[in-house]
Length: 381
Ligand SMILES: Cc1ncc(COP(=O)(O)O)c(C=O)c1O
Image (cartoon, rainbow, N blue to C red; front, side, top):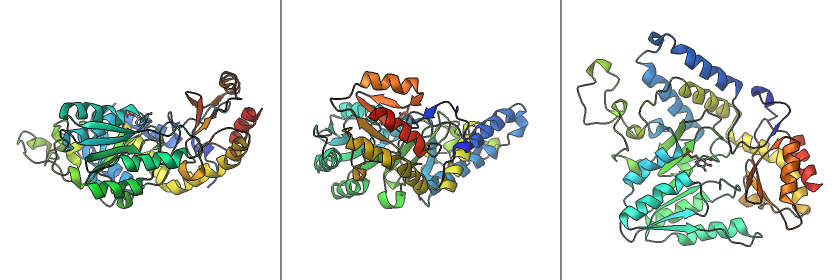
């Protein structure tokens, strides 16, 4: 794969290395959004079929992206917290049970479990990373596995840590959760779209992804997958469109006790957003056409030399084996002046995120090896 900068409209004076904050819009996604806005000028252009058909397409494309053969298990959510709320509503957890999370996880994948644990008298167990940076990823993964016991009812983690890109071994975690009969819930926001994820391999009970980062979509639309453990559960809201035969607009007050098939009961009300859905669809189609594995490989190809040079100069970066290529942290050593580095990067218009004294770098296919080299040269200087 080669650089895809021309598919975007990034300001050429800026080096954007911050997709983990928010992705830029593809030109095709922007056009789909504008067409969506124009459509409502004359509302008769929006047919009853379009309330269903476009989201169905989206389900199929997201299912393809995560290698699921069951698009009816995929739903539109407005946020990760919404997708997790459906899980919290249905997780069988009671007094004395435990829920396991990783340390300093993104709040939308922590608050639902804090509240649930408090309500039910259960315990939230946090597997923290070690202070020792030399084996950080390895030991952190071991700690997560050690935290899972027969008391565990659910493990809720990401595939990568959102702040520093530490890779969590979902296969090993899944195996352990299976042994003890616990659910595995994955926040895929910082990985799905840039790092291959295979639902058939991992079999998560839920996978929830915000759309505006690595799915290259707009804000306020995300995608969730719910596995068989949630079949027949109770959704957080009761929207008309999620009920059986909602396609029959003339018969909506023939109220139905039944829901649409699969996991569609968990879909957000007004899911047929006529602006956001076509935008998300255009973004997913571009991602599947590039191939998620190719995106990860491209990111690795542009970061590797710079990472090696920085590590040789005393910056701390997780080993390849425990780190994604599209998102990673550069920790400062004692010899580095982070205030000065911040100023230099700002002056040079190199946009990254700061997490404490670490820099979070998150490139995508619009970045180049030269941009990474410029960043590393400034850091080395
Ligand atoms: C790992 C992770 N999950 C979720 C979110 C967003 O959560 P929500 O969609 O609930 O606002 C972010 C945003 O930075 C994130 O990094």
